[in-house]
Structure formats: structure tokens, C-alpha cells
Image (cartoon, rainbow, N blue to C red):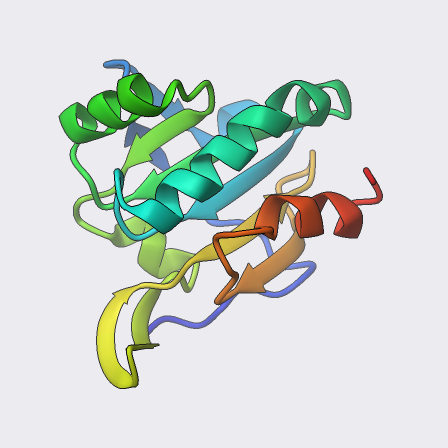
Length: 156
């Protein structure tokens, strides 16, 4: 299991394919704050709730200077179906090798129904305009997370 990031750390750079056929490189978003959230699997109930919450808040987050990218191990084609099915407007990125998930401390041992398993740890990292970690939250709940994050960021 990789180490978790802490406030002030340099956010690991990444380039990952998106569900729309392009790719996103974190360092190309310098000058803006980026909410990078990690979720286990597209089209599951909790992940759908979280993705829809981010989509519903996207306009106000962008108005406050935040970009949002969601990262899972799903292939781009599945992410495209997820976007279509749930009407998502956030950027969805694919990390099937789990290299970015691991670099951010969002892949490793976790408890699932009382058992210790290896998998994606639902996490959110906010990267500031200089590429430093401004917020690092691990083992977040899918339901209510976006509202809590907005409060933590002072966005109400």
C-alpha cells in the first residue's frame, strides 16, 4: 500500500485517458485548483451518487475556480457508458494499471463488509494552483461527501 498524501505535498503528476477519447495531464491544469476524486467502480450505486453530486455542483465549483476529475480503474468505454447513463458532466479518467491510484494512496488495503481486501479507497485530493495538496481526504462516504467537501473548502 502506498503512503497517503498530506497537505503541502506535491501532487503526483499523471496523464490518463478520458472517457471522451482524449487524455488529461494534471500539470497542464496548473493555475487552477483541481478536485481529484478516486472511486472504486463506475455504475455502482455509491459511485453513481458521488458522480451525480459532483455533476450537480460542477457549475458552482468551476465558478469558484475548481476543476473536477474522477479517477477509477474502469476502462474508458465503461466510463463513457457511465457518463451517458447518469448524465455526468465531470471529467472521468481511466487508471486500469492503478498507478495514479497508488501514487495518491487511494489503492490498498481497506475493509469491505468487515473483511480486509485490496481495492480502491474512496478518496478526494484537492490540488492547489501550484500543484500542491491543499486537502487530502481518505475513506470518504459516497453520500454527502460533495456537500462536506464544499463546506471544507468554504463554499457553503
